[in-house]
Image 1 (tube, rainbow, N blue to C red):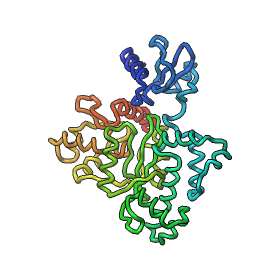
Image 2 (cartoon, rainbow, N blue to C red):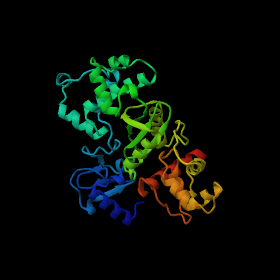
Image 3 (cartoon, rainbow, N blue to C red):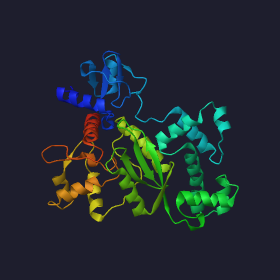
Length: 352
């Protein structure tokens, strides 16, 4: 049951189009009969005409139909059919040189493609294509193949053109490549988009898009691992994408994606302890400190908690204050509350 206080809070979030509330509530508009997500761009109704729901299922059962503008039955920032189709085409033929003629053949406007790729990946379509071509070249070079082979496979007829493009992207010539490569991919979730960073063997970062200081976190990770980042998917990213889908459906309780954990000995000790907190349960910072053998170090434990970069997998959201208050969470308290309630709800099914 949503309280009057929550209704006022949700209405303010609706007016502000606050993305932190994505997945936290849906609003039914009595005058139109539709229900929306918090960030819907449509004109805002008066509070008296709003009915708030915690799930889209509740809104549907109350006879509201989904808004055609914000599409509340899809994930926030859900990849469009156009982007999905073009990504598949690039994957099948990464060396293809795209022209305006290609877009005319599939009856798509170039500006629409540019806008949708920019929204989804933060780069233009053509920049995405270049990155995918270089991704293949990088893989070949690291496997020990001749640079000329990597050049031809990635669709460059000119050696100088290949070197120039490679250097512009990686900051170094292909013959001097010493960087570790991390691949970045955006994943959809009921709480908004998440970003995953992984190499071919392990996942190094999984964060919600609204995590505090996300850009700085990624920069620090790149410095620690001496990495360059390009867009793309690897096996660990494919696996975590599948596992996240199951987790949010309440069908997965432990993750098996291989992890690349970067941290101090103390941080790793805390993160290992976090992974022992059972699904659907919580632990206090002070008890966690006792668990790792440092009973007076609860502040240091809290700090280590906040530097965890593998959200959900290393479940720092399961740590709360001794008095029962939720404490902090880098992606916001609303996300933490939602995750704890989600796990508590499905833990009952696990125990029955």
